[in-house]
Length: 309
Image: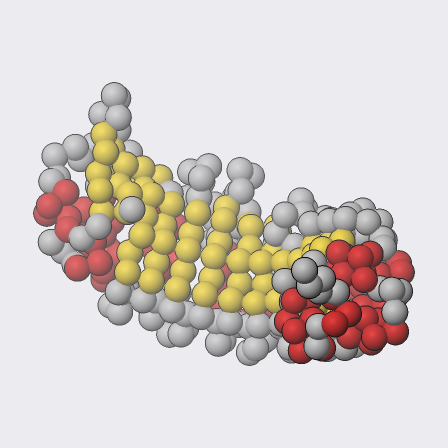
């Protein structure tokens, strides 16, 4: 019987195996056993670390090798220890950490997510950095609640191509588009305390946005609000909408097609609160090929919902 020891494996195979093992298991299972394993562990690149507590020894060893970091602890972990981060996901955040999200500490950061964090007082400062090109390496953000800028102005961030935010004011959409001239994907979710008015929004002309998602689960927006938003994004090819429509659905899709001449895909979960209960789904599907997957269901109160699979 042949007994194969891990030390007998060549470096190439060990490095391949290490790619399938969590960084914590590597550290606590292998580091310190011998110089060779220590060397191999310290030669690993582009590591991902999920922190649920401050593991200072592990961080000290691997900080320069980590390019993806997930923080899920209220402990005040110093983010400046990770100069080569490309992806940062924060489920909890302290004031110090928020102040550390700067290009001088994270010059390679491409993706930032704070979407699971409730509203916090320093978010306006972070939004100012992101949407005013103070962090030019960032390409994609998934943020929590973002407000219209206090001074009603952001500078442009041409590097941003994907933005997801929660908001309470539809005017924010225009500010994001104005500050992100190369944006390709925008996802907006409206919260329960949304104030559904457009006020002093910047003028947007022929923005190149290609994909737009709008979710209004608390039914704060009217047809006119959605129609106004569509005017900001005439080049969209894919759209996903979730809101309460108080005009006949057939009128809404006609208006949609008037605004979005390049539309290729339409996804929806739209409650129809209008008085129109007669328009046949087959008629709606004939308006455009992207409507072919729309389904219509009617509940016990004769309330219709239009949805795509």
